[in-house]
Image (cartoon, rainbow, N blue to C red):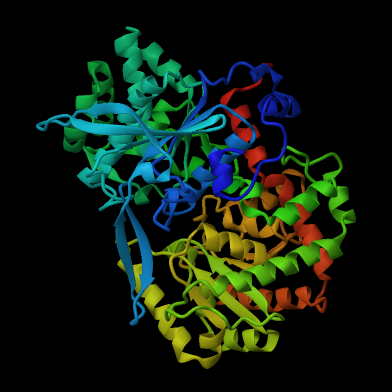
Length: 626
């Protein structure tokens, strides 16, 4: 058992030795045996990652790495998926010495508590120091810490004044400094480790692009390569994974900022001139995604619909369309699925030991013992009710009022405008009537970014609305300081999950996509919860697959879809689906609970496992020979 396995209280099944070789053989990629090794591992660069906590010796549980949202959680699952498969893998990221916690004040306002932390408290060891240059200042001394777990290693870059995750505006000098430190500093840290990245030099979002620039500069300076040849070589081994559908939401930096923070770290003048030319073509400012697109020969979105929209949205430096492949995000089942339920899937022959669909998976889902699955779910519900007694609601009270026979519904994710946390309260009277009639309790959780005053105000308005209605005030529980422990308890115990990203511009009527993938829905489905969702992100993969098979567009979705051409129509659909879900759970609806869960599981379970995601990335990064 590795140290991270101990931290999250699970042990990955199967023999550690030879696990990766077995996986490669299973997915038909035996040709990669000996290509990805401890000396030439997969390398993965991310500005944030969330990994479960460790006791620091003072009675506090601190995350090994603290992320802010879906991108950080996905990075953590990618790391754990590699570890589970015993794949040589190095994740390079930042170590933020300031972490934050959410508190809801008496007046309903969100406030943030800051706390200093140190990598020594979370199992990291210092392995050396590197420097990055800044024009007009002395070099910045960066500390490099590492933590090895089985076949995987986390490398973090930090210094005492590094600040917190996403500190300040996204185009601030400090944010650029952090990104340069992780890219150029992290690339130097690989020398300390004594490894050379394998072909897949994966950039998890555009702010990590400086790792790719460091590699290009190293080829030019160290190997004396021709610029064109060096650029093509870097493109062949670099993968850019995009999570941001709206380019306007990205940071745009000035040439002056690059001259102060970026160019001092690039030794080769041709590389600097190449980047300067992009500024000239973009009116003196530049988004990092523009460089990432030019630097990466392989590009992917994190769901099918996201890849399609990204391909329409993004252009290269000459204004040409960009092709994004689709690698839908996945989850590590041991991290999120009730251990008894995961064992049940394997005992029933639904998943194999590598968490890939076993032979005849779809038939075995239809034949599985649903009574046993429902008993496991009932235990999870009890454990959730018990867990909530240890957490505080929006009024600072522990949550002890959910009865055993109540249906538990949940909405948990980052408090962001496009996710619409307020949507379910659009008609508070109708919501209260449904919840009281069907005996539903609603658990919410999520954090608004400290600089997002608009969504902080929305959160305060939600609390006031809840307090103004006696039914909602007794049945809606907002849990403070959303974290992984709460997320795991909710996915394993809640009956219904609500997912409401924007899918339509109600002014123009145009179809839009705002959720790149989202993995919250995957955790709910894997634990037998009923999903109520708009068709966006990874949820929409089913519609894409159906279209490829020639299925009519209006086919009956294997989840409860929120539809409508206006906000009011969507709200009406949402409430109707809440009513329908309650009836299904009590076997009083248009289908039984067993029929629904088997249908939803058969559609989604083969798509959402982390092992499938790893296989897709390997096939994208190392195209199979003809």
